[in-house]
Length: 155
Image (cartoon, rainbow, N blue to C red; front, side, top):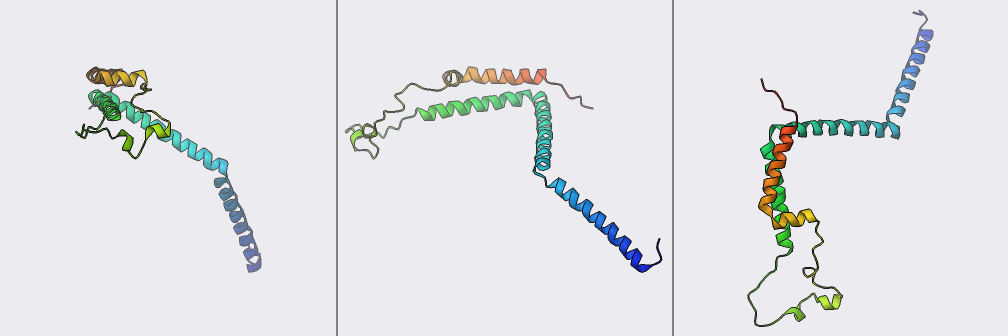
């Protein structure tokens, strides 16, 4: 330690400058776009691992709930299909109002989308035609996934 106050202050200034340079260098490293992207990617990977592990645990612990979820999805697809092909009957069959609607399909050059073939995938049409079979298959798939997954031991 130096007894001269001027030299001591000069040494403290040099040390403070070194700390400042180190801090500035660390800030530059942290704010580098590549560092930020790498940290975000690693965080996303870790979150994905945790979610995947949690989903596997839940699926193996609750296969019936997983099957019920599959049934709920099947019912939602069925309801969506039924709503897509639904027609409204106002009960007034006395006169055809097709020429007086606000939207005239002949003028637009299009045809009735309900008259065209259904572009839905095969699985969706099978679910729509056989909803109960689809629900049973969903329950079976959930049970199978639950049986194949690792089982947690309870103490």
